[in-house]
Image 1 (cartoon, rainbow, N blue to C red):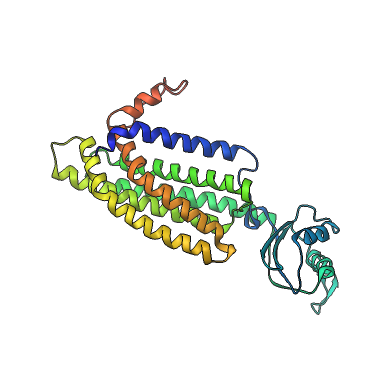
Image 2: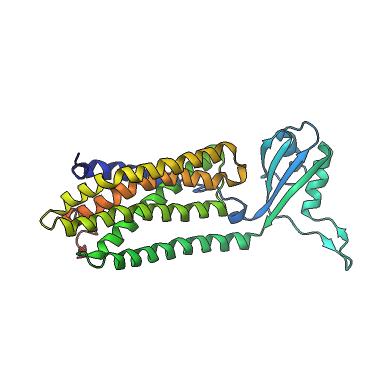
Length: 320
């Protein structure tokens, strides 16, 4: 089967997915930020009797937390997120002389019944903004390192920078679709992005590039083995030789991720959703998008496409 001949259809599908992701991100809120990025306080509360989420929300409204997020995690157990709370004022002995925001929340919740707070985390807005900056820097640095490494690793094949650039294009493709999926999940099921989400994105990048290198490495071997063949023929042969390995690895990992989704705690849900989406999209892009981009570049199709874009076409100069 010739996969290369269907690259126009594959690019069309990917273009539609990327465009849909960009549209989803353009509709506010782009992503539903968790406490790690927006700042605030997250509290886990476990009541000793039956309590409704609506009752918890009503109680918090009485002390000005109209924007509180209340999610039932199990019977009479809730995950509560509120805006950043003021700290309590303590004396020299560490005793509270003026209750803070957390004490106010606990006081109003006590009207609903006895409860325990096994976990409480606070993140300031300043730290949240710093987390966003660090996450963006991490993705940029990882992408630059990948480009340099792949270009160096494939330095013995013609035009090695194309291999690194194609891998980065596939990487950006994957990240945009993952962000688009999370944007939709945030709008539909209130799934928040947190530090675990960034971990998942970086893991997805690594997984996608790993699969891409497997295909590119086979292309490099086949270039030396079939010196008279065209890149189209070599790329198609390389895809056929590696697709089974890529699918088997991805399906195995996906089974583990789905099992964790069913039995793991809700605290790692963002990580698992990223991994599930990233495994699917990353496998697809490493087999098709990265390789198809390499072939389209070699055939001059990228240059012709860029030449048709207004304002860009007149200045476009393909990289050789």
